[in-house]
Length: 193
Image 1 (cartoon, rainbow, N blue to C red):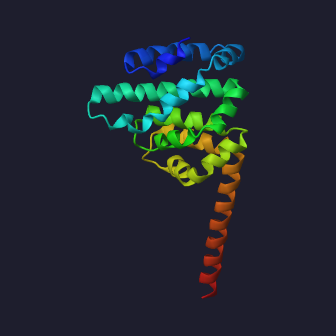
Image 2: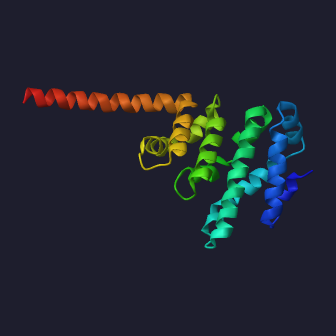
Image 3: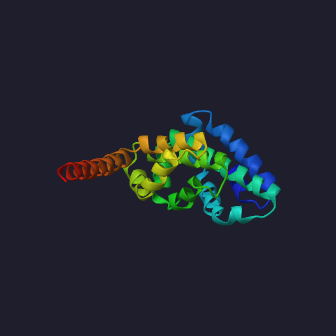
């Protein structure tokens, strides 16, 4: 199987393996179930845990190569999660979200951020455990979606994460409701004075 090549030190080999696995993951649920049964998730999740220090590279060429690997791994994981309940359960039991969520901020380029956010949207859609894990990032997601300075793809993807999560939506409604109540009470107090 190709999955063990995801953990090689040669970035060209990792990229080639990632591309092959991505193409396989695009072939539908049966193919995804097969590659999940072949244990693609262990090396993929292991690779994703290594991302925290990968962007500290000074060399622009190596950084671009690293960002491409991160983006491709997020896209591969998203394809797998869309098709496999087993993969979603494995994803839920791992602590991988804490390794992924920093990439929705500006530590990486827009393409990585969009891929990260799309993966988070897939991981949280109809998945209470994924939604719970993302609840602490509501302010970041709201800021990303509302910021005029943020890339449009990032803004749309951040809104998609919030829209795909019932918990995040209900938390945001409660927050907005409180803000409206505070503004109304201030307005009433001002009129009374």
